[in-house]
Length: 122
Image (cartoon, rainbow, N blue to C red):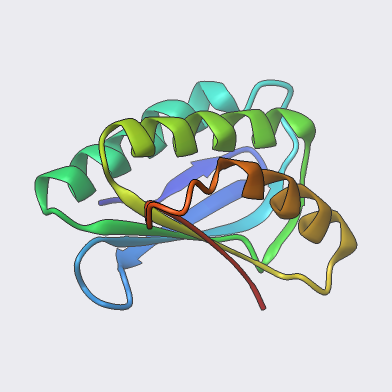
């Protein structure tokens, strides 16, 4: 899996902590008008690779400086697609940053207790 660079946003890809999937680290700012145009296909490929390996995905947002509401929309689509494909994902964020805490706390409504979605503040 390769990384991604688009405008002020950069995503670094590396094997996940448990080496059964991918760790995607978001850096910079996701501030374009329609980040989904770039994120949807990229995250879709990540789901494809994780599904092929029976792996999981970790998305790390702790070092992301900013994302707009359109980015959250793309992340919601990613969560829904991963769930449909039965790919487990973990979203890691900085709960000391109020804007991240509010955004990711709102995503808890997608956690159905089935182990496919994990949200971790830290």
